[in-house]
Each structure stands twice: as structure tokens, then as C-alpha cells.
Image (cartoon, rainbow, N blue to C red; front, side):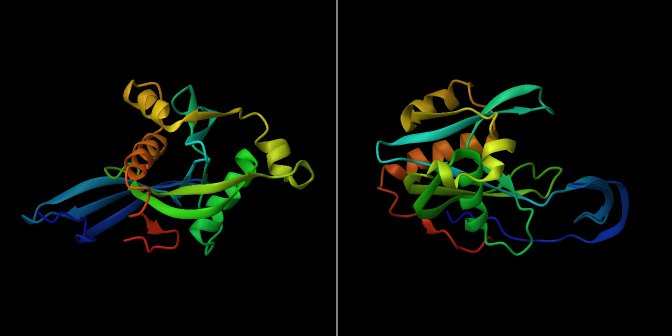
Amino acid sequence: MHVRDTADKWEVVSSTERLRTRLLKVTTEAVRMPDGDVAERDLISHPGSVTVVALDERGYVLLLRQYRHAVKHLLWELPAGLRDRPGEPLVDLAARELEEEAGYRADTWHTLLDLFITPGASDERSRIFLARGLSAIPEEEITFVRQHEEADMPTIWMPLQEAVEHVLAGMIHNSPTAAGILAAYAASAEGFARLRPADAPEE
């Protein structure tokens, strides 16, 4: 059976903006359903994000810890960042986040996953990249962002299989992180041979 998500757009009868912040917009839209009825849906507009599974030659994945106030947790996560520069290629953004948050560069990039993070309420998309051929950035090249803004995020290297076990045990909760770890582990069984190029289009 061929299964594929497809774009579609039902008629929006009306749209009311409820809130706008630096990052988000909240609207209520009245949508005409297939049976003709109209139903209201609250939507959060989000610029989107990228996430990076940085995997070294030993098969270890890079994780960093970050406080997330919305859930009142310190979470172990993959490097990630917002799509905050319009027009910037996503792989360039991913490389910038890997450098700023972790202090590493990668020679090889592939697209691992494309996700809608909370499709029931938000349009946020995240592309998850696999980055390999890693090298630490020399101290004298470390950016101001890494030295100051990201300095309070400790990092660890964990065997990919152990990271999978942490996800399945409910010890890692960030959704792109969990998805990225599981996808990287699944892709590793075929030597990452079927992954899309880093510049593959989002559908």
C-alpha cells in the first residue's frame, strides 16, 4: 500500500488574529468541513526549525542539555534552531546551529526526516539533518554566540544505540530529538544509503 502525506487546503470562511509576539501568531479560523459544516480551529503560526543528529566515527551522537520553561524541565536534546533568517538554506542554518550550540563542523550532510511538530494546532515544521565527518572548531574560531549565549548548555556524546534505549525508556522527551535518534538508528542498518540529499525539497 502506497502511503504519502499530501498538501490540501479547505476553505477558510473567516480568520481572527488573537495574539502576535516576536515569534508566534495565534489565530482562530473558521474552516468549512467536507460535509459543509463550519468548525473553528485555533492555529499557532511558527517560523519553523531545524534539528541536527551529529554522529561521529564511533557511532556516538551529540546531545546537549537545555532548560525549557514551557514544560519546566531540563531536556537532553539534539542541536537545533529556529528558521529566523528568511531565505537561508536549511542546511546552512543547521550548520550554524551545530557550530553555535556545540562547537562542531560537519563534512557530510543528509536529510533524515521532515516533521510537523504539532499539526493539530501549529504549522511548525522541522527538518532533521544527519551530520557526519565531524571536527571540533578551534578555540580561536569559536563564535561569540557559542562563548556567551550557548555556554550554559552542557554537551555529552552517547552511543547511538544507548540513545535509542533512553528514548524508549522515556528518559528523553524532546520530540525532534527522539525522532532523529530513532531515524538515525534505523538508517544506520543500511549504511545511511537511502537518505535524501541535504537540499531535498520539503513537501
